[in-house]
Length: 245
Image 1 (cartoon, one colour):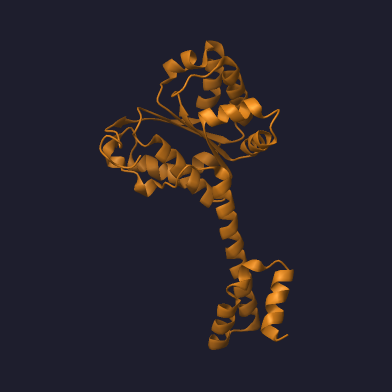
Image 2: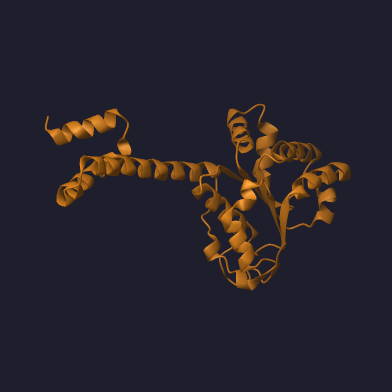
């Protein structure tokens, strides 16, 4: 076995698989520049570190369950009232996430509430935070089956351990009383431990009717609003104007 093959074999045995694909290029550059052994070793380790970071990012993006990929740069902020460029910049810097603040986007369909929520979530994942995205209809199914289905229990456990939980499309479908209770318990568990992003087409005044329990709804809103930034969006629908939602 030649030295190159032996090196690749050792890298794989040591589980340094991230550097295997780039080791030839690193060796060639080191030889061309007459790099010191310490510089060469540093380049090898950096290649492995970068490969692991990329793999971790892909894994965390998959685990977040984003329905699509969105960025703040793709959001047409000039067409929507209720959020400004400075607001977008504040969302991008993620200090609200470090402070366990919640973000609530309200407004009619088609204004990009989900777009903004996903953009914040992806920015958080890219910065190294753990994120879970769920549409409320699926979240309620998971909550109801967590005690009898392993996959649901696993997902709830991941949600509870996340830095950011995004709950999308509250208000589009009715919520049963048991579902509302389970949802309230989840919000209580996450309170001041994680940030929550919520998108909804219904204002606070409609939530008690939607949840079917005024006292519980009031208690839940107290938790959501204690540390929160609220955006009431209005403007021309993306879908009506033929733009991407």
